[in-house]
View 1: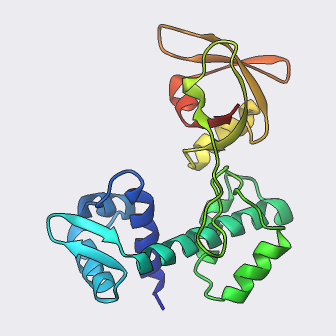
View 2: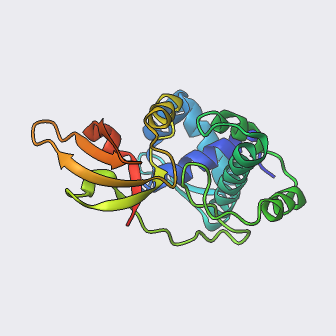
View 3: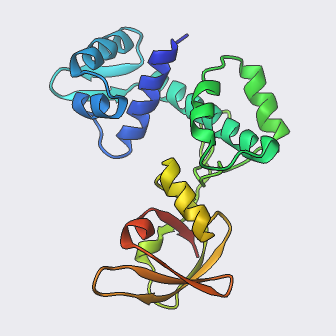
Length: 216
């Protein structure tokens, strides 16, 4: 059984390991806004519990036990986000902080009942895949909107930036999950993109396009 803080560290290491593995202590400190010395102390505790392999100055990796624990936390977080949006009418920019609290509920039975109640969703409201009870993720295929060429079409299936201001910006533009888009123009000057959506043209910056995921 892990504490609230230990679970947060496991989840953080899991997400950072997708970018770079082993994960460096400074990266964890920056993500958690914690002093490096405190991070080191926690990594030693997690290592003693067999959840991570930690070597000073070389970084940390999740053990199989630690990885399964982290994926379970991610699963609960994303299931609760689906519940909040679909059943309680939260907006997609409102759910993250609430799910951060709900993900620490320990009941396995509750998690399985929640999954069943939601009819076993494959993705959360941001398009991120939800692992099943065995820790397996659905194989989702997508590309960044910024990679599309003029006249390319696709459907918005996810985002890689989950901050509330970014999600509110997308909602204001009508760029939400399931929307069909077509690239009508790409400006050479700054890489901004003109999209055709619902028979209307809108312009987005290259930075925004980098964080929108598309299935074709």
